[in-house]
Image (cartoon, rainbow, N blue to C red; front, side, top):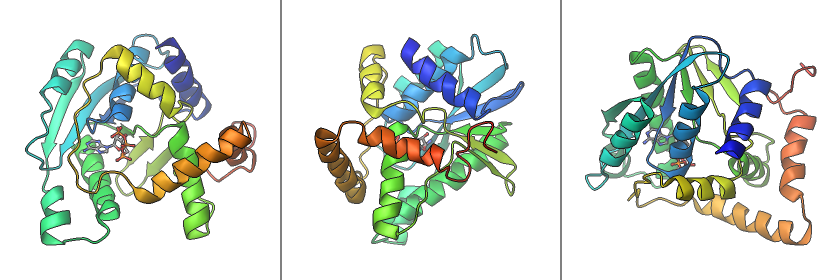
Length: 240
Ligand SMILES: Nc1ncnc2c1ncn2[C@@H]1O[C@H](COP(=O)(O)OP(=O)(O)OP(=O)(O)O)[C@@H](O)[C@H]1O
């Protein structure tokens, strides 16, 4: 956990993600990344100089087989309020709209519902579980498949909703998150979504794996380029 705390502390400090008095909603899908995020932020809350309150929010997508009670127990242990918000997202995406490309509509609906639920519960920030490898893969997907140089930001203020989205795990590699989740025995809930596993992202993962084998440090250089260029919103202090 110490190493995870240092990854998160670095991101939070460099991008000023947490201010005194913030109430932060952690979006907890039941997957490994957001469970790790919940555990690390609950830990950080104990000693971070800026005091903040945490709440955990799960959007229930409508899959009956998903049981969130182990997450409720974890939240009790961590002393974090837990909110489960029922939604019709699965029905809308698969049964009503019968989307051919369901992932983008689903992601859009989740983002909206998560921000609204956070706001309704008195939160001014939403924390998402995107990590170091997500940053690199997202940039590469945008470059290779859309012809753009683009990636989500460490911190985004949504003025229409008056809420700030933060991504405290941008320095935490996925492999490290996986091992932490195993060590802490965090209760991952299997996601039965039929579209689970984005094929384009998988393609990029494979490409990066093979590049990394021949050219050690490829991932690090791609991530570094985002900050050195810098991509708008990724500037470090002193570069703004
Ligand atoms: N059903 C949900 N309820 C609440 N938050 C969610 C939900 N789905 C996604 N999120 C939030 O959005 C982030 C990005 O979503 P994405 O579907 O890309 O998840 P992921 O990369 O598979 O991560 P995880 O392992 O946390 O599921 C998640 O890490 C989580 O913080």
